[in-house]
Every structure is written in structure tokens, then in C-alpha cells.
Image 1 (cartoon, rainbow, N blue to C red):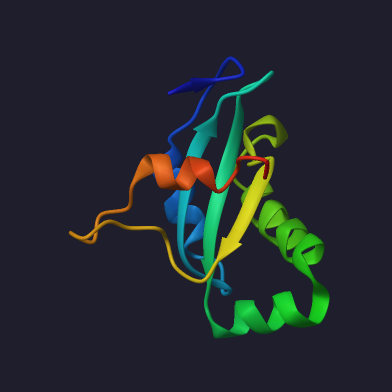
Image 2: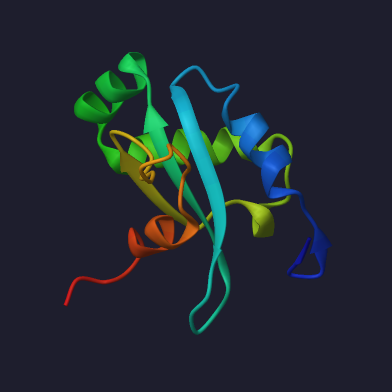
Length: 108
């Protein structure tokens, strides 16, 4: 796909993110708003959850952004991040795109 006049494969970026020592699973998606952004929903493994508890979401997000920065231009790195215990799936075990998007909605 094309994003910010750059070609990017979100599935390729997901595969790169999955190679990080803290990541168990992840999904990347486009978030439409005033500006279109790339969002990341990440399930951390036990060392990742320990890092989140010890250092906080800002530090974990920065580490994951730096990891991706080794392979992608800054404009392509996800701007929005959500850390979840499990990816939202349906009764058939498939991750639903709309449920991922809802994770980025502002609470009413």
C-alpha cells in the first residue's frame, strides 16, 4: 500500500515487529481521522509485560518504534500504539478489523 507517498507492507512490518524480543503478536492498521495514521495493537510476551510494568508504556513504545526505525522511514512508523492482553477475535478465532479500530476510539 502507499502511505505518505511511500510504499509499505503492513504485513511485512508486522513480521518485523514480531521479531522483537518483547512481542508475542501484533496487528497494524490504518486509522482514519483528521490525518491517516498507522496504528499498532501489540500483545506482549512475559518479558515484554515485565518491561511494561517496570518502565511504562512510553518506554516500551519508544523501544518498539526504535526497533522498526532500523527498517523503516520515520513517517512509516506507527504513531498510535495499544498494548493488550489478547487480540480481539470473534467466535471463529479470527481477529476482527473493526474491533481493532475500536481500541483507538476516544472514550465518550
